Image (cartoon, rainbow, N blue to C red; front, top):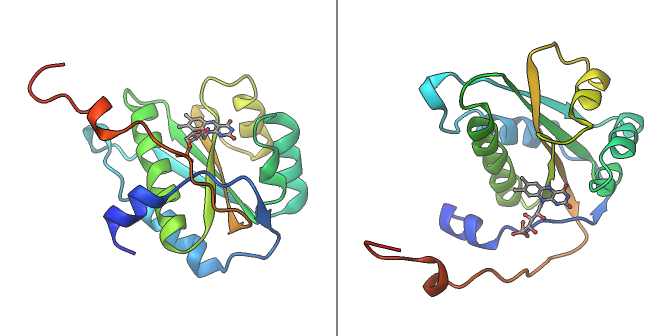
Length: 163
Ligand SMILES: Cc1cc2nc3c(=O)[nH]c(=O)nc-3n(C[C@H](O)[C@H](O)[C@H](O)COP(=O)(O)O)c2cc1C
């Protein structure tokens, strides 16, 4: 799968089989995350990979719109040090993770982290040091569905020269 195809065919998956994801695949997905663009070259990100079922269940007790994290084999929690561009940097890394998972034939879904009341509780649960902010929680696993969500068409979103 090339990059253009990966970008255009990725969709959020919320139904997973419990089969484990090989460690080398998880490592490659996180390796892709660290190549994301980053404001001022700061690379403020830290990635916590959670495979333990009990911990994933505890996360879903906090993140009410991420219940499927309990059933996906992997949850990646993306944290960033509190830099000027932490949200942009963490979001760029998150998108790399979604695309890398898709390129490996896995499903994924971005679950909100930053701005959510549970952000600090997830950080405490995962032993994250003070000063690191939760940007996103990402479910990753073997998909049991292939969503085909439509997108706003190109002619509605593309504005040449002026809006
Ligand atoms: C910042 C952000 C927060 C999101 N939070 C959640 C969430 O808490 N739960 C969820 O099921 N999906 C969440 N999503 C996924 C969106 O619902 C999904 O990307 C959107 O519906 C478009 O569908 P697609 O990813 O299949 O293209 C989030 C996406 C983003 C970018």
